[in-house]
Amino acid sequence: MKNESLKNITSQRLFLPVFCLALVLLVNIVTTPNFFAIEVRDGMLYGYIIDIINRASELVILAVGMTLVVSSSAGTDISVGAIMAVSAAVCCNILTGGERAATVYASPLILGFIAAIIVGILIGCFNGFLVAKLNIQPMVATLIMFTAGRGIAQLITDGQITYVRVDSYRTLGASIPGIPVPTPFIVAVIVVAATALLLKKTALGMYIQSVGINKKSSSLMGIKAIMIIFLTYAYCGFCSGLSGLIASSRIYSADANNIGLNMELDAILAVAIGGNSLGGGKFSIAGSVIGAYTIQALTTTLYAMHVSSDQVPVYKAVVVVIIVALQSPGFARWRKSLAQKKVKEAA
Image (cartoon, rainbow, N blue to C red):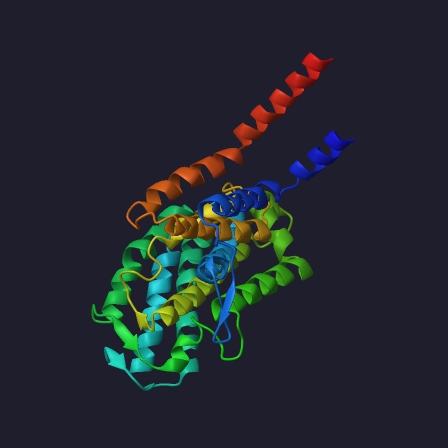
């Protein structure tokens, strides 16, 4: 009976993602005794755990968009980091009036935010057109913006870091007065909840999975496969634009070289660690969110262990390879065959 209960638990789709996240967090009980300590200072929450949920916010939002893209097109969008840089550049350029720094807004804050989001969506639409309509392989199609995106951001900012030295601009990347939880976390929760609600309350989630499993058959059934793929890339562009705004608000500037740098790799890894197939089809938003927090928890853990920033990617890559291997179909088959062998030996 116990074996059956254990089997039911381990066979759950989110078991491995949750297990991997818990494993990374539990390591800190030994390595960093105060890792789970949370304190309140000046009405704000502080601690390693708070830092994880705060710093992972951009990645969580990107992972949501990436999950839908992977599911519908069986490919990845490697331009999300560049889109973040372009959106941040557009927003800061509008708010400063084209100057390299400003202490007052040249245009309304909401105008800068809306422009950045629209730019992100438009770039997503461009990617979606290449993939859905022209049938270009997703990685190749998004390689265009991956390559050109930061150049576009540099053109917008004249190759300089553009600073917005206004306190209200930092609110999106810091906190709202009177609310102890970081604003980026609140935004991430809203995006995840809204996306999950949209997919659950409409047939869109089913359509995305159907197109990802078999595009041709879905089209024959009356599903507009081209439009579905196009919409997922547009939504991924929206997520990228929003993440760019949060990243820019954190540093109250537009740094075309560093905003969103290598974020596309972490977003893809978050989807994979979350147990989603990179070959398209069925997906789990919850799994991708857990994957995003696992990656950030791993990064924070390494910093807490005083690993230098230059060495973090190496350790991170090793751990990620192990986590992905544990969730691979090959490992699952090996584990199943081993269990069957033990049953035969016992009989």
